[in-house]
Image 1 (cartoon, rainbow, N blue to C red):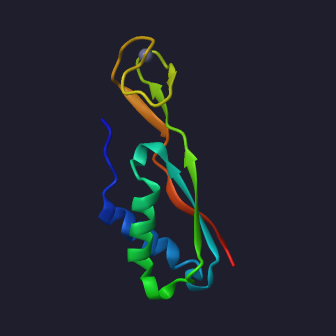
Image 2 (tube, protein in one colour):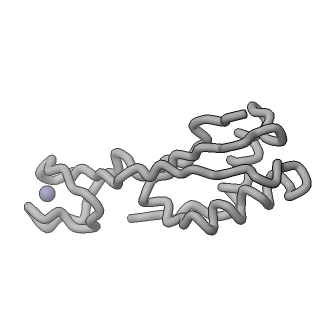
Length: 110
Ligand SMILES: [Zn+2]
């Protein structure tokens, strides 16, 4: 059921989102990342630097991540489920992701 977001796709996403900001002048970049993306802070930082290019960043630039909790809804009994692959109420595996797959730059600080 869960599909991991591929790193290549994330790099493309970052590059697209970077195009809308002046990242090279940024002192801090804030990301919103869903728990279901399976990204760690280190991986995100590596991918970000790879996408932007290390020479295009301020040396002191910081990254902040706001983690979005996983939220799923059981298609069988409508129960709301957090971070589980099986509905605790009815044991159904038919869960719909409501949130937790987010991945975007929320804010850029200069
Ligand atoms: Zn259920």
